[in-house]
Length: 217
Ligand SMILES: [Zn+2]
Image (cartoon, rainbow, N blue to C red; front, side):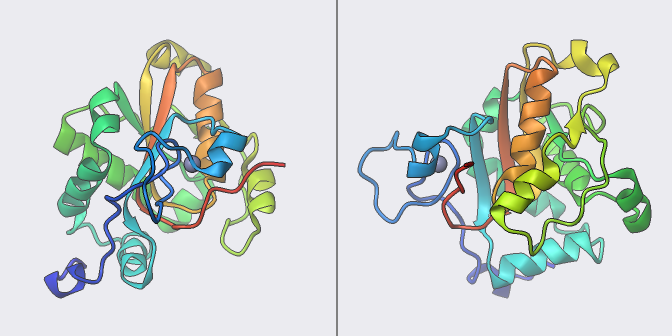
């Protein structure tokens, strides 16, 4: 999955970026800069970071995780995510993967975000809670939907079960997912965790689409 000859083709996101959503910038004017979308409408989460720009090669890595269930590259991926999200990793009290709906989990047999969170948790020695977020609706797959449709699709889809509220109260939670596209899913997760009592939510993904975050209307 992570043959070294591919590495030169991967685009690691380490340059100038929006300090909130992590959108890469062409040039940096001020290191604390926010992108236009975040200034117009700050995201529910505090910061989002990704190891790689989503492209042809990083897509192969994501698909190998999601569809072939390849786990051999996880320690390397966890190292990349740690580098990309250093401050977020330090600040996190706990990690939580973006959940799949039960039906999809049963069909696929695994949740690749759980694997990513587990590998990252092992590397940084922080607890991973796989069940503090529940997906209560079986939402259609996001691929192919517009930004607005994605937002409607996942709005209200997540909740924190009553019994976990004490555990997340006042905590900083690092949400883990494979790809950040429009951010609609992590926004919905962050909203649920905040209403469940968490103090702050950060997001780390393996890859992200490089375009600017869409602004909710
Ligand atoms: Zn931004």
